[in-house]
Image (cartoon, rainbow, N blue to C red; front, side, top):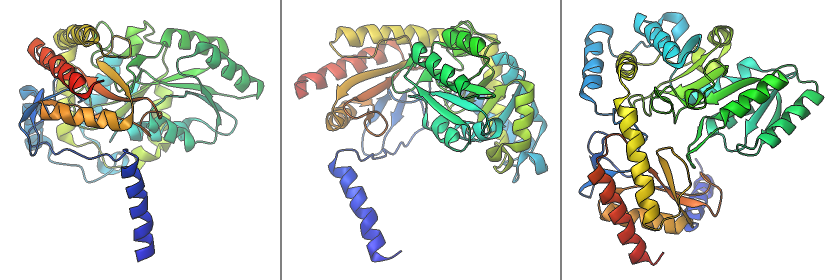
Length: 396
């Protein structure tokens, strides 16, 4: 690298820092859980992990992962279609399909890969994809890889969605795919899947949902937003992750109609050219699904905790995005303010992160609190107390 090139990149980094947009990583020195140890500070209450069901340090999952190392080894050193498919990979795919009520499932190393390998495989130049404007970056990037006509509708706006479907039909699109997050991760908003599925039926379109922030706890049995919205069996494609509520490790999947999964196995590039998901993760994920299929205790506790915290933080005078999801955005507006508040909260024993542009639009900076089934009522009261103290100290 030349000195001119180094200077070019250094200037970009300095600009990011001057704008108050520089993201600094905090070093955790303990397992992921409700209370964690962070380098250069004391034990703190973790309020910003995707550990919705509190399973990241669950002893049963750890044991399942350890046992799998003895039986199945550390890794496969290969991709699935060469010599990287073990019995447990097929077992996990079957269990995900059964849990979600889908016909078949294909595993990926991440949900980002699942979304990255979806659209290019299924859609050609004669097709169209209609995407919610606030969809996750992995959906956006996946759509960029395909040659289909592209339409974007306003977030959860069914009138605009129908207008875009009309436009796609008027342009003679052969196959139309509606793509949406099940839960929009920066706001905690839940997609209106019943209305989306009704429009899909009216216009002969397919429906794809990324349910990464819902599977395991949304809906009566925790199956996801399609259960929550009472559209089980009507969603054609569900993508998701094993790295949030379902244990918190890594790995992703696409669960869909059998013909779609079969085609993905033949042509989806992230699947064909990425190593197989590690056996220890697969074994632990199988254990997670067995647990969630036998009891709703954890999702019930999470639902109770979420309502409790939302009520308490509102009563303390904070502006939050309304909803029922354990993602609770505390709106601050300014990026620097969000970072300063997060830093002060860490000093007081509450681990949270400020979110700002480009993760969210300019002027909508926030602290995104995430509730877990692992939190106690005392934990949630402590968090509200410290938020209130910082609010008063900063004169917000």
